[in-house]
Length: 124
Image (cartoon, rainbow, N blue to C red):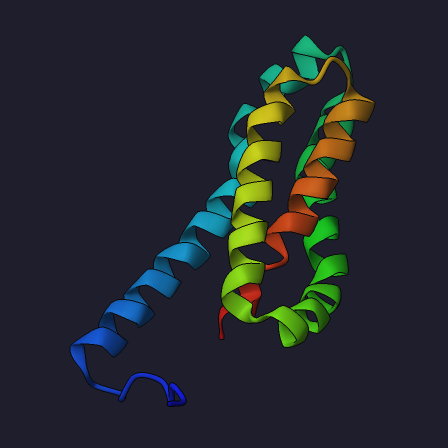
């Protein structure tokens, strides 16, 4: 038996759409979370504000660069496993980022976190 999807208008379809909406909100929240603490980041790491802002830009770049690669992987193994891998990886990297000791490590973690977040746009 082949699964043909949820019928538009059904309660299962509405729950699915609502879940995907919140997944998108969570992706952008995680992507832009450091923006609120950029002054503290600049002060704590002794870098200028423009350099601190790279923590947001690095994640955005990682996401933009990875979407096509994730779509190729999703075609092979499925969207649900790809999204699960991306969410778990992004969460782990997001938890490691505050523990980074310097700007270089932070930027690498944030870029990699963006790469993991690139799996979420595949939901459509």
